[in-house]
Image 1 (cartoon, helix red, strand yellow):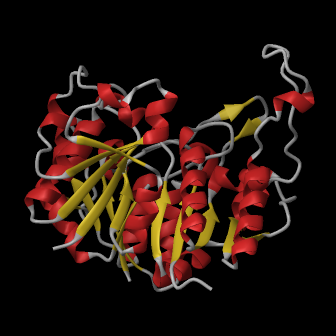
Image 2: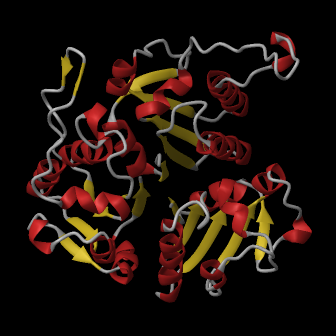
Image 3: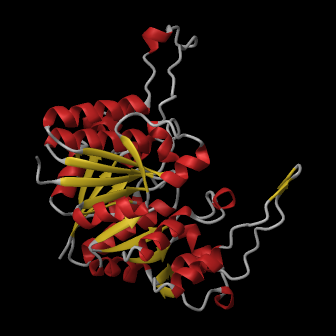
Length: 106
Length: 135
Length: 126
């Protein structure tokens, strides 16, 4: 099975298409693939524990990451973030690419 | 010389989208990791290396020309070129020639050259690539 | 290297460019023997609708004489040997009649879309 690193820079608050992107991530994971969803830019607006994010909450069988700079830029502190989202640096993207992971900016 | 090369395609024009900054952060991170980097600038992305970009003062910020230190993407590209050179890495930047012509941004900074989609295909055949489309 | 091309942003600059620059780009790759196929998603599924007409635009004395023809560009891509898929749910939700779709388009479900990725070395999202 393949490894996928998906980059999401929007949130469902921006566009309903983002829910389809989350579903794509879920479908890839359900297909037995190893999937990482990296939230960056306004994509991190779903990361707060208090955000209403039903579609994101369904993503239980993949890895959720959030870009540290995007969070800091928006004043979102680490203790505000959902427990299943890991805060990482942008280098996560290039490390995935370097190991041959299929990387897509949704 | 690094064994690892990453290829990016970037489409957004400068001063428009957060994706531009994020893309540059990825390029910086790649060089920091010791990877070679190829960049194909498509459509509005060809203006990122336009040599005639000029900074400005900002009266609203209450800062002079010197104090404002206005970001310019041509300077970001030049800085990444320098970083790659110092680390013995490749940082190859190709602007889509037709996109350059239709926008009249022929004056690119040193180190950036003209090319076409076949350059990107050649890179993608040799390395993992990421398309950063516009929305 | 086989690369799947996902196009989701429709009609963004088709008037100025006289085409979708992503479809143009993919057609150039095909002529360079690139192994590429297309998936239309989101608003871009409407590119598969026949009889699109962007003619008649003028600004003062300037008139556009060569407007974009997205359906014809897609047909040209199909004729080049590029497989063009479109997400069935995205077609349905926009109420696009089946009778108005290019016959060469292959409709796939969202679930089939994810499974399609396994057939390609890289997936490029435009």
